[in-house]
Length: 394
Image (cartoon, rainbow, N blue to C red; front, side, top):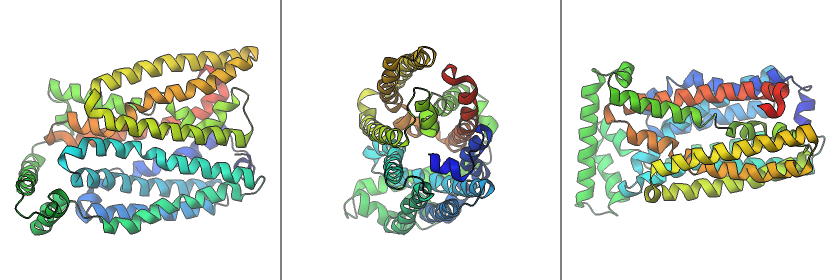
């Protein structure tokens, strides 16, 4: 928005890319340590710590006085985000009822758009009501802390992971959680003791293999190499499918088709996030019915077709000034996200966990997260420079 650009004295494309990517740099810093915190402190406590760090980073961001200050605050937000997003999916997966685990895990990733909707519409409101004021960007920055603050408080109303409790020798507490949430209070329900037995067996296997496996194990056998090709590919594709352009630089994308009015861009962005959320949650509920392979193939084919149309329409507007081509872009972008969200939003986490054998699951999941961080970092840093240099050719 113009108020943000004016306050920071119209940063160059390189500086703007660094300011956006700083959050991912923070996640990089914390990536090796977040799993240790989740396993050491517990899922709930780690989630609370991560949320508190995010709140601190957000407040620093809202009070930024210059570019270095803003970058430092974004790094701190990234540190907290890495901590929280390591613990959150573990807690959700380990608490979920067995038959509901796949759709709930898929919905976790798709729920990103709930925050995106709030962010988009708050920003639209401040652009409309506070034109020319620094609070047009400071208020959305401050309000980023609200979900994390609520999470830090409300997480204590959620039970701790039974798997973590068993790992720490607190078996009676783990059984109590399973009785209450999986068996509706029935002490002798067979599901409780079947699940408890599975947890103990899994932990025993994990302790046995921890001394015999390493990251090299991920690539030692043909089967594992094939799995890792898939895991690394979907991690990278989830950030380099074209979605990063709209996710992080929607203003530049719409400027390329002649839409520069900030309230108009905000209105379109807010509407797009509602659409994205609807598709992502709907796809999460259909994962078990339609199958993973069909959704991934349909998604990739759909993105290829729509991105070609998007590029051609932008080129016609840039070279010929064709207003109809600009309008076509506005229609194609939701279709692109329809294709993206039917697979990559719900299944990025769920499919990775499913195809990796237990003995390499944790390390394989870490490798996928590393790939995502690399993809996001290069995406956020390179895109503004590339858009400035290449325009529609990007």
